[in-house]
Amino acid sequence: MRLTRWLRALAPAIGVVLLAGCGLQSGGSVPLPVGPGSITPVPALDGVAVTVGSKDFTEANILGYLIEFALTAAGANVRDLTNIQGSNSLRDAQLHGQVDIAYDYTGTGWINYLGNETPEPDERRQFELVRDADLAEHGMVWTAMAPMNNTYALVTSRRTAEETGVRTLSDYAALIARDPAAAATCVGTEFNVRQDGYPGMARKYDIDIDRVQKQIVQDALVYQATADATGCRFGSVAATDGRIPALDLVLLTDDRGFFPKYNAAVVMHRDFADANPDVARIMAPISARLTNEVITELNRRVDIDGNEPAEVARDWMVAEGLVTAG
Image (tube, rainbow, N blue to C red; front, side, top):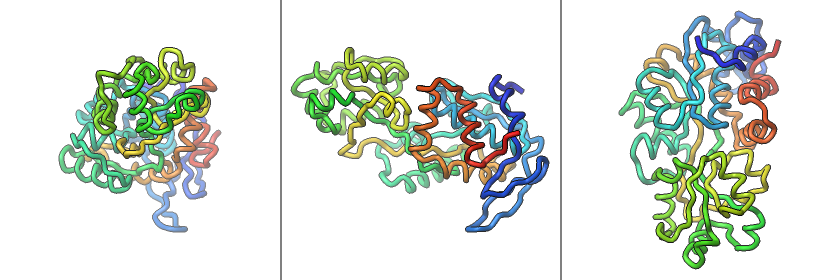
């Protein structure tokens, strides 16, 4: 079993899962809520082999470790395959049975995996559409949707927003039309080509691509570059990234409603989900706590404070009473 050094170091300090405020001794069953005010014990995942995956950015790694600690606490033998490069690589790994479980995003599922062009504006409805279509077409189970919505967005520095008056994507499009240099933009590699990224946004907001002064950079470099406002004055970001508040960046309002909702949800292949129904029930109350405010703060602890994603995930799980320490 391949585990990172952080999971090796931290997993022994994790006790059983504690949900709905109910604690059990190690080796007992995992208490899970089945209705308001009610708790029904179900068998733990003793000895179940689980391979957990994630994409290769801070938030995805944190989410992957949340799964790992929850399932480790429930007795599973967890193999760590977090930090897989790119959405399509993680998706392929799940489709081919190399990864059993991961968090993914409903917008990615709807647009990129299922090939739709128009997002569903209601986040619950979009989750249901992805859940039903992906199960029918590919045998993939989507469950335990979180309230956090890590949609794509454009940001600018507060100084640039004040100088240009740009507060919305329509304002940004108008600035490109009249002064392309003033709207120089850094974009991440995926955002540059995805239909739910810059190409689709440009169509929605009638942006002339030929007039855009655009630099393609690594996602991690966009935030500081935009804050410095030297090489670029606007940048593509994930809306729940902790560097946005830390660098005092301003999110531009998507006033035409282009960007899909990107609620995180647990994704498993049907065979694994059917064989291990307790997994979805274990993850549901964890997902329920993942608001935009919560995940942005967890991201900040990694990207600004320099903590390890595994440590941040573990500490939050303990603080929330979802696992015990020691």
